[in-house]
Image 1 (tube, rainbow, N blue to C red):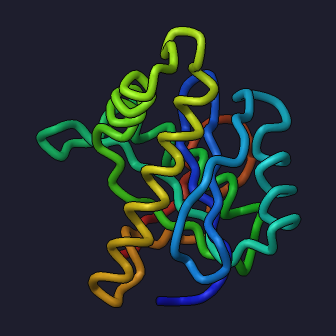
Image 2 (image 1 turned 60 degrees about the horizontal axis):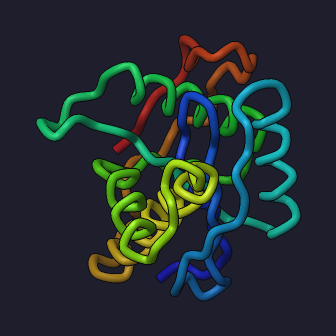
Length: 168
């Protein structure tokens, strides 16, 4: 297991849930929910600096059939903007199928009203994404998901940029 704090990110159309793990990479915990829009990437970068994050793990929403749609394109674009503005810190995309559904189920089971707790759902989804990545790395010895090429445009306009690539 590679040491160091990682941030887990659940990119939504309205909010971005953020989680972090301990320096040993054992357990993910909720951190904050950011409002999508002007300043959200900058706020994430501030969190990465504050926690001295060694890696950013962004959830890649795929369909149950494994296909990538508009939500996946938005997540890749967001990850590309983060990678472009955070050179030297790897940004990885990991499969996050059903993380929000699992977060809603877990919160409902614990008595939280999921209609009023949307911000909490985003944080819990980020925890599920990050914990899954940590567990996968611990089980296989390999870094999880796919490393995002850091030559993305970083223009903040919402697109991934012509040079954004996902590496195996």
